[in-house]
Length: 311
Image 1 (cartoon, one colour):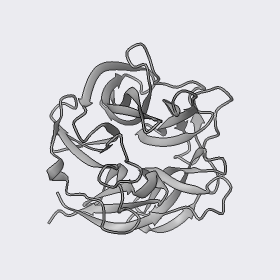
Image 2 (cartoon, helix red, strand yellow):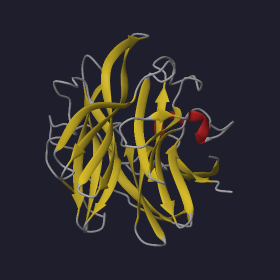
Image 3 (cartoon, rainbow, N blue to C red):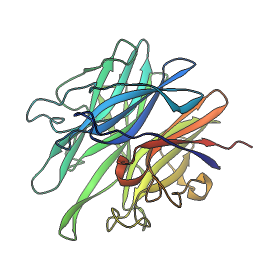
C-alpha cells in the first residue's frame, strides 16, 4: 500500500470556550453523497475533552462546510465514568439510528486516569445524541482490572464485533505512571451488552509497548487493522518512540498477523504530523479509500487525511 497525504483538515481556533485546543480521534460518518461529518473531541479551558463535529465536502475534505460550536454530549454527573472527559471512538449505522461509542475519562490519584467505554444513540441522523446509560457499557473487571477504551465496532449480520484497548498494567517511568495496553476482542447480540472473549488480537512486542485505537475494516474477505503503537519511555518528546501506525491482517478477526511494511504510512519530515501519527479512521468513498488521522501531540495540531494510491 501507498498512502498519499492530502494535508491538514481542521485545528481549533481556540476562540470557543468549549474547544480551546486539540481535535482528537476523528470518527467519520457519511451524511449523503456530498457531505461527510467528522466527529472528534476538543479540550475546554479546564483541559477536559468534549465531543463535537464538523462537516466537510466528501470529494474534498479540506473544504469545511460547517463547524458545530457546542458539545454533542454533556459530561456525566459527578462521580460517573465520564464526568471529566468524553471522546468519540466509533460510529455504527443501524436501522435509522446511529450508535456512537465513546471514551469516558476519570482522573485518578495513584495513576493519571481511568478510561471506560460508553454509548450514545442518535435518532435524527447524527445531529443529537442521548447517552444510553449513566454507566459504561464496558469497564474494568475481574479479568481486566485496569481500564478498557477506544473501541472499533462492526456489525456483521446479527453479531456485533468489538476490538478494544485493554490496559494490562501501569509502570512508573521517570517518576510518572504510564499505562501499558494492547488490543482485545468482544462480541454482542445488540451492540450494548458485551461478552469479552479474553482474546488478545494485537499483543506487545519490543517496540509496541502501548497499542491503541484499532481501526478494523473488511476487504476481499480479509479483516484488516490499522492501529497505533508507541514506547513507554520518552514518547512525548522523541519521535522515534512516539505513536506510529501498525498494520495487521486476519481471516477471522481473532487471530492476527502483523505486516507493518505493507502499510506505507510514515510520519512527515516536517509539519503538523512530523512527530507522531495516530488514531486513524478508514472510510471508502466512491472509488477512493480515505484515512483520517491525528498528528503531533495527540491531536493538538488537528487532524488530516490521506488517500490510498490504487495505481
